[in-house]
Image 1 (cartoon, each protein chain N blue to C red):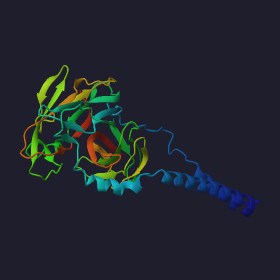
Image 2 (spheres, rainbow over the protein chains, first blue to last red):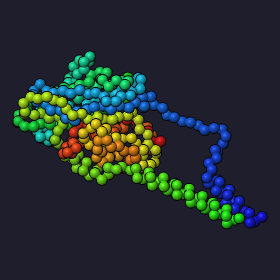
Image 3 (cartoon, rainbow over the protein chains, first blue to last red):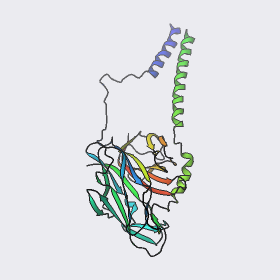
Image 4 (tube, helix red, strand yellow):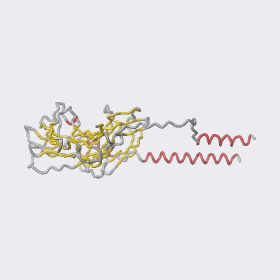
Length: 170
Length: 167
């Protein structure tokens, strides 16, 4: 009898370790925190650089290369607020040196075939392009024009543009 | 009889242990393959003064800027209490720039930064530098900093806002 106790205990211990037994037979509570819009995915195309050749400025369009946005939501693109200087103006700096006093103020203008034209102001967080559904073309706005002002020293001026992209409820 | 049963139990336990350890090893191999170039990215990020809206003294010409495709999604879920997380971050192969991807909480606390990601590369496992507390973080940010493939000069970039759920 004693000889059989050790293997029996070992087998029972092994089974306890390897087999998961439900604590009760009442069922399992399935929890899924669903957030509408969270399934949306997108690929938005931004310019890597923009060169301005004259005082009339230059523009560029924003478009999507892939879009799958849940109904009731849209992908929106804005200018990141850090793009503006503390005084609320977007500057191009001589040789890209953001500490330089030699800088050229610029006007940023959003455009859209059916949305019109509007000058952007820091702090208003205006949408410069929005996309809906699966269309890769902007639903509203869609392009940005940068018009330079005047500086006092000739040279190469530059700065970085940052964009905010998010999925938002319509 | 006793010896046979004990031997069988030990063998089974050994095989189970081996399978578990093998799985852990596989996961470790999937950790960020770009760690070895993160210093280059950091050096570049500090020297991004050149570009990306430029005003030229040259004569007028066409302005057809290169494009950077920014991939995005609305929500990311992390396992609570773990520094290793599964993600799907990639630099589309159509891009002609490196990405450095940074994940930030809404209060701008950085919890992850990749090394340089070449076009066509992706990350499926990452190791967080800080483990966020469980919860739902609205307006967390995945920042895509972009760098020229040849010169590592900084290019325009984007912040994509996401809902980060840690559970």
